[in-house]
Length: 116
Image (cartoon, rainbow, N blue to C red; front, top):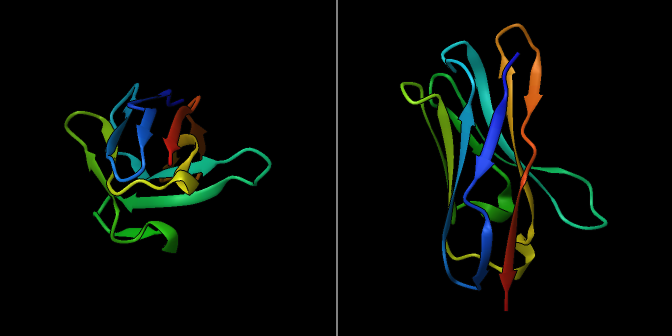
C-alpha cells in the first residue's frame, strides 16, 4: 500500500508558475513509475507527465517545454514544475504511482486554476 498526498495547487494568472509535490507514505525506490494526471471539468483524466525509476520521462504534447517532472527517491517524493501556465491547464491534478509489481495508487488530487 502506498498513500500519496499532493500539494502545491492554487489559483494563478496565465504565465505564472506552480510547483506540485507528491509525498509518498513509503519508500518510492520500489515504485516503477511516478506520474501526474489531470482532469478538467467534463473531460477525461489525462496523463500530464511520467518518470520512471531510472529517470526517463514522457510528457503530454500540450505541456512539453513548459512542465518538468522529477522525483527524489531519498525524500519519497515526486514533483511537477509548471511554468507558463495557461487557462487550459486548469484541472485537478493527481499523482499516481505504479509499483514494480504493477499495482497502482492514486492521490486525492490538488486543484490548479489558471485565470486569463
